[in-house]
Image (tube, rainbow, N blue to C red):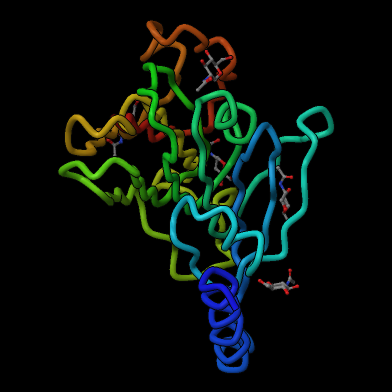
Length: 217
Ligand SMILES: *[C@@H]1O[C@H](CO)[C@@H](O)[C@H](O)[C@H]1NC(C)=O
Ligand SMILES: *[C@@H]1O[C@H](CO)[C@@H](O)[C@H](O)[C@H]1NC(C)=O
Ligand SMILES: *[C@@H]1O[C@H](CO)[C@@H](O)[C@H](O)[C@H]1NC(C)=O
Ligand SMILES: *[C@@H]1O[C@H](CO)[C@@H](O)[C@H](O)[C@H]1NC(C)=O
Ligand SMILES: *[C@@H]1O[C@H](CO)[C@@H](O)[C@H](O)[C@H]1NC(C)=O
């Protein structure tokens, strides 16, 4: 027997044993692109970043056609392995994700583009580049004690609905500097306060909302 299948077989054995102990643990969603295919996986284990064959082996994956793909909200962990910003745009731009892990598996540096994410609580980023900053994270806010008290029912003390919105600069994956974030709280109108945002017109103006605007760069 050759070493490669053996290593995979042992991984499978380890996995089956692990499964017995992890009975009730929740699967998390992993989405990655490979040769213009988008794979949407449900994984019980944490798969080493950008290890596509291991993900295909250990997770429950299916192919998603870009033409039929719809933007979805993710209220549990979401991991995305990507190589260019077009996939991120398709999957994430103007969607709601609470806990996001992004792993950059490409080698071509990414341009500065802004990804708009609603409700982001925690972001972890990882670069394949063996640079100075292999994994970094930023927590924008903690989930409320009462899980039922979800995003849509969060209020500030003036009883305004709190809306979290994050703008993520995709060039941060090039790993040239430390991950940073800057939040502006108590923003009543995005259009008014950030009129330099090219597409601020997509944000409706509403009286009874208080935005927390976070820039991640
Ligand atoms: C991926 O699968 C999850 C369910 O496991 C689903 O909620 C989500 O919408 C899917 N995402 C895409 C882009 O197909
Ligand atoms: C959870 O993941 C395992 C393998 O990773 C898979 O066999 C199982 O069907 C998944 N469960 C759900 C509910 O998707
Ligand atoms: C997200 O959408 C906005 C508005 O359409 C666009 O300007 C921006 O470039 C998109 N972000 C990415 C990463 O493609
Ligand atoms: C804003 O909405 C909340 C409920 O969503 C309500 O309790 C509060 O009175 C409203 N405030 C104003 C100023 O309309
Ligand atoms: C939020 O802004 C409103 C007016 O725009 C002000 O009355 C209120 O005190 C501010 N709240 C905080 C917590 O800064």
